[in-house]
Image (tube, rainbow, N blue to C red):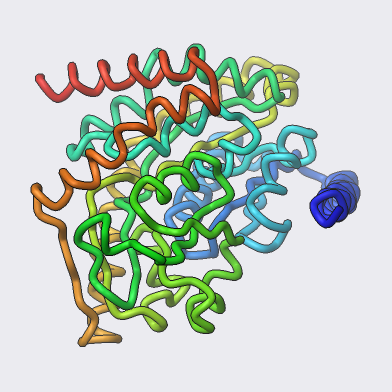
Length: 345
């Protein structure tokens, strides 16, 4: 019953926000495109959206105004996807963990050790893969979502109060995860107790010991101050935090050809830009964490230590098949082949 009530409340909230946003659009003199973020102002997603705003407004000669909504302005991350699908928002970021609840096929990006350790390879795959922008993008279109682009925001880092170097260290360890079935299964495979929680509740849950750890890229750990309530940062090398840039498919297709071209060219221009930005953000934010909390411990798992987690994660490919179907497994296999081919160049 509580889940039904929760869904009802979320639907009412999204509907209310939609009416408010549509009302604002009616008052706007210029053509307005709304772009919502899963992260706060000053984040990697914000850097992407602000650059998008700058380029669109410049190239359109001011005929298009882009309004950027930071995290929390329009509800939780799950709300944003629904608002885009309903055509209330024109653009939003959607992390693959969150999207996986709506579009099960997107869960393939939560399979550990999928992406390359070489971000030049990741840039090529995430911006131009025929698998991602073919059959996978078609799955999103069925839900009126258009996948405009994808990019990684940095390597996922664990923040904990003890060192985690092997799966056995995760015993009885409550690890916060996004509400993604694959992420839940991933941390079960690693030996932890996965605990889904909204992003906004993570700091308090760490502070009150309701959870023992969480994972995020370094810039998010610094922004949300997770390092204040944990003592160890660990780089396990298992995953990049990957996000999609989404638009409403019906809205996009209803635009004049010149507007669609403007969007496509701008999105293509942003791909190399955001890869450079996320790399610099990670370095800068780690330096800030160390300056603010000099005693924090930094742990980078060795190749041997990573291998133990890699082995523990192997059954997750079968789990993906059960959760998202054989077609999704085939997409995963094809993307792995694309990555392997690029790594050989």
